Image (tube, rainbow, N blue to C red; front, side):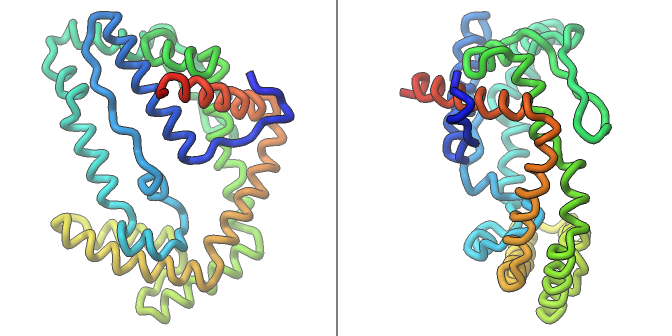
Length: 269
């Protein structure tokens, strides 16, 4: 494992490497158990930018709008990927056996309480999923607790961001910019709400055109008012504050991800 002094977060490109390696481990493990498994495509860099609270990358907005093409791609994979269709064609008992081989048995689950008293989540022990995680990260349960804790901090820091004066001032400027451009929205949440209503039932091409026009205006205003930059800066600040409550989990998370990256490079070489 990596020494504490060398800890850092992974880049997006490194996260992709780890996920690709995990798919290869799943395929090999399932083959050992006598089951076929087709590797599921790992989202590329641009895909991972979809869904941000506020985006100021006008180039991305011109090309992808709000990422509808990625949503449609994910839905197609969910419905038509060979691993999915193979499972769906199996008789009930064989489908259950396949699921246990891949994901483990829900009757034996590990649990973690999420930050902010929002509840608990659980995942099965065993299965190829945990064998792959063991190879990459080390102990699967330690990884599960660390990952769900560190990635579940939004209830702790988002309210702090939203009430910070620098955010509220920038948000008002963004809203004024949007209004001047003929898109009167008080905040990105209201924009998303109306976008969903307006595009519901639209053909894909028409919805993408609608999204692109709106997303470019949105990103331009976010850039001109520094809303995206300020939001990101505040998220970093208040997330770091929240992480202080979970020092062990944060150390485990970064240490295990760096270990996974080293393993992934060997697997993919």
